Amino acid sequence: MRTVDDTENVEVEIDGNEDVYTLKVMAGSVKADWSDVDRLRLAWNGQLLRDGDKIASCGIKEGDLVAVAQGKQAYPALPAKVGGTVQKAGPHLAKAAAAPAAASGYPAAKAAPAAPAAVAPKPAAKAKEAAAPLPPASANAIKPTTEHRNEIDGALQKLTSHPWEVQHTAYSTLMKLLKNVCEQPGNEKYRSINPDNGVLKAKVFDIDGGKDLLMAAGFKQENGAGNFTSGREADLLAREAFACLSNHAVKQHEKQERKVRDEKIAEAIKKDGHNRPNDGGNKRMNLGAPGTRGGNAPRRGGG
Image (cartoon, rainbow, N blue to C red):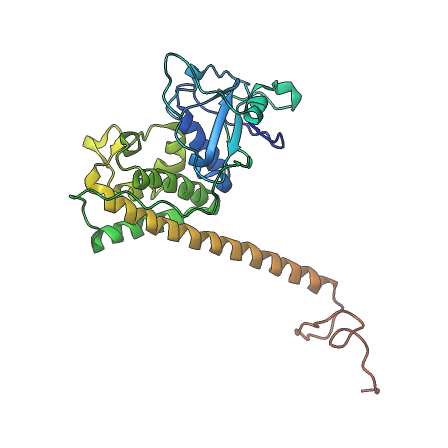
């Protein structure tokens, strides 16, 4: 994949039978900045790619470059194809999509590629526009109870037990899945999740706590097989799970940042200690630069 500003190339492995939306999810799992896949627009061979199109049916082959643009807000859904025509990409996106792979030294992908990318400003975008309110929940929606919240908390605790890299990927993917259901409750494709999907299996279903969170959000699997699905009666459960997950992910991210910061401080103190002369066991730190008051300058007055 190549960003529209030609500053970054990313290799992503994906099965040709997967659709463009799955490709976006994979892109979002690579880097947190790309997790809002509704802001990603993909183009190949001068044409924009629709979320529901299969990778293979788009004509994308192994080693091809797919251009990726990231807007400041969600792109509107592309209209359906009419009479076999396709919507053309804009000049910058089309140029990046049509450029030969050799121009950037991009390595051949291991399968029909697709991936994330960089910021491509959208001139008419209203970045500061307030987020649209969620659609009304179904009249027969189940209201979350203490039991439901306990199930959500239990799933989040399981997710927390994994290394940060695993947590981060799971949080990003789960937040996208639940966000789609919350914002577009009438869209049936977001209410059916395939546990055998390679990406979702690795990022969610094979991770302890991932499946539990989806089930706490109202997703069910009939007879232990097939897709996990949810009905409109789960509208409020999905919103509750999304809110709890969002707060939890932010807290875990802040915790990880503090951990990294503390490790760097500890390492710096350790190096500083090795470089200090033996002071007879005095463990206090000398603050201030050498030669300044409070530092290592010699005292005056013979004291």
